[in-house]
Every structure is written in C-alpha cells, then in structure tokens.
Image 1 (spheres, one colour):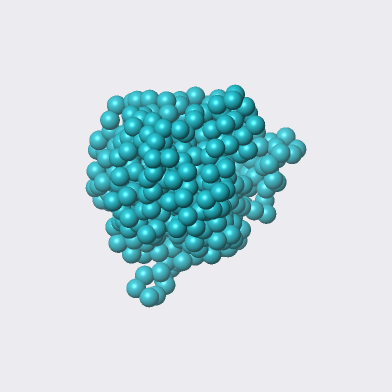
Image 2 (cartoon, helix red, strand yellow):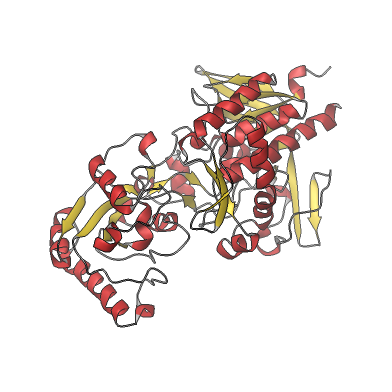
Length: 482
C-alpha cells in the first residue's frame, strides 16, 4: 500500500514562486507540504519593489534578450495577465495595470508583505502543511524518478516521501563557491543584495540526480549600491541602489570607463560589468544637470535624493566645482588623477565635436557633455540580487534530464511553445530532444535563462513559473494515483 505522504507535492522554498506553486497545487486537489529554510516566508520577494512587470511586447523581449530561452519567455509573456489576476483572487492587493520600466513594460504593483501574507493564509486555509527552518538537503530518486526529499532540520536529516517536488529555493547568489565556479572569479566583488538563504540548495540537489543546467550561468541581476564604508540593512537595499548609472560617467578604480553606461534598459547591465572590475568597485560621476534632473528612476526618487541617501549611509561622495578638482579629490580613494582627467575630458571632447561614435567604450545613448559644476563622484560597488542561470526546465516547468537531451543552443525552437504531451519526452524534428526527470519541477530563480544579461522582470517569472509548476506537479501526482 502506498503511504499517503507519497500522494503529495513537496514544495521547497516559501517566496512568491514557492507559495504560488503550493497554493496552485492545493487548488488542484492534492496535499502539499511547503518547506522553507528561513524562519519566515517571503524570500527575495519580500525585499522587492513589488512591481509585477514584464515587457509589453514579445518581439521586444526577443530583440532585447535574444539569448534567453524563447519558449520560457513566451510562457511568461502569455500567462502574466492571468497569473496576476489569480494572485489578486487570492487576496493580494494589486494596483492597476500601468506602463513601467522605462515605458517598455507593463505591470501591476503589489505590497510584498501583504501579498505574501495573503498567499500564506490561503495555503493554510486549503490545508497545506508548512515547515519553517527546514532546508532541502537532497532529492530521493529511484530509477530516475523522484520519490521525495531529504531535509535538514535541527542538526539532523530526515526523509520526506513525495511523488512530486517543486524546487523554488531562490537561486544560488548566497553561495560564494557556486558563484566563483559559475558567475564571477571573485565573489567578494559583489554585495549580496538578497536574502541570505538562497545558497543553491535546489541547484545542487537537482544536478546530483542528473538535472540539466541552463545557458547563461554567468549572468546575474542586481544594482550598484553605495560603496564601503557604507552601512545599511537588507530593508535599505532599494534606498542605496544607485539607479542613475546609465546617465553617469562610470569609472573603475583605475580611473577608466569600462562599459557603455547607457547600455540596457536599466542600470543592472552596468552593474554586471562593474562586478568584473577590480574589487567590483568604482565611481559614478555626475554634473549639476544630472543631479538636478527630475527623471524618475526605478527607486521612484530623483538622482539628488539617491546620492544623499548614499552619503548618509557612509559611501564615499566627492564634490568639486571643476573636473580638475574632482580628479584631484579622488586621489585619496586610489583613483589615478591624470588618467581620470584624460578620460572625462576626452569623453566631453568627442561628444562636443560630434565624434561620439569614436568613444571607447561606446556611448550609444545619453550623449551629453559633463561641464556644469559642481560635480559629484559617488562610490559604488556591484551587487547580486539573483542568479539568471539555473536548472533547465520546459514550458511545463519540468526539470530536464542532462543525459536525456540534446543541446538547445542551435535547435531551440522560437515558436510560442512546444506541443502539449503527456509523455516525459518531447522531440522536435531530428535535432532537438529533451527528457524530463519524473516528478521534478522548478520555479522562480531556481530556473535558468529566462533573463539573459538583460532583465525580463523578477516577480513576473516567479509568479508564472510558480503557477505552472504547481499545476504540473499536481497533475503528475493525480495521474499516478487518480
């Protein structure tokens, strides 16, 4: 006789993706146990700004993120409206649909604590079992099919039987060893702009049973923060995020521009490049016009306010009336005076003379001269909020088997989605094949390559993949037991 605990879904991770998967599976009529490593629910979602957004047009997604997984991008784009409506139906208070994110996206705002609390209340009302301070240790697999999880709690491990498992532990940004292996040579270059609990538990457990990993493991999302000796709490991450980098002149500790500051849709692309500079640190340089700009940033405040918050936190903020004095005043911070002066003056000269195309690195947008003092130089350090690479899933959120598939790099279809099938294998022509690990699903930041260097949104993929994983996992259990 099959133990009743085997007829359930175990969800690992209690952020937006995990809670969404758990409630969705309960609504589908199966028992669910939700395991959360932290002492409270919420994960990274609790620290977010709360805008559930993605691009307004699918073609724009493919134009901006061509190396991302086209099928998973379709999944997010096609299902986000229904997923947001579902979240509202669970008691989450969502604002109206609105243009956002440099006007390329559409989204609805939520209050993260209220939304997490609403999902948790619905989970309990539907009979879900919650276990806090319980970490995923490993997966239990027999003949290539998942039969449960081994968990760590109170200095011991124990087995939890289940026929379907959803992994939603939030990525591996909190694991320096995995970061150094896949993302960046020196993880100390990055602040952890995240909860501290996402240490790759799902990534490690799934790859140990043969899961495939996605392309783009070296990509990550974050924003440059106020540099040391600044001090701030996790609740102040957004306050000290320096969102204006695309309009600045960004230099590393060698006094050199290292990237096209204007590249990408937000400052997070510049942040990735900053992370690969010496110590992951540099300065964003601004003139009076930029400081006085009323242009709104992702933090919903203007530049001057952001800079003052950085100063109040203790970041290096240098002010001077002339470029010469600014360069001189940055010498105590290790910036070579002559190199920095040459960099800024050459930047201004090429733009003023109409030769901006000759700038190296390039500056494709926001081409303006930095001449009106006072000038500000704000010390910044790169951060990581979540890893963009992770486990490879299909459009039903099934974790794919490393040994059972071909490389998607050349043959990944760009159509809306694969054809629906109850089989665990999908073949496309003769060149592409994928095989799922029976009973294993993933959602949120444990999945990989929906975003690839550019950012498709964080909460929207979490919500959509959570819904998808919950439905698929429940369907798998019901097919086994009726």
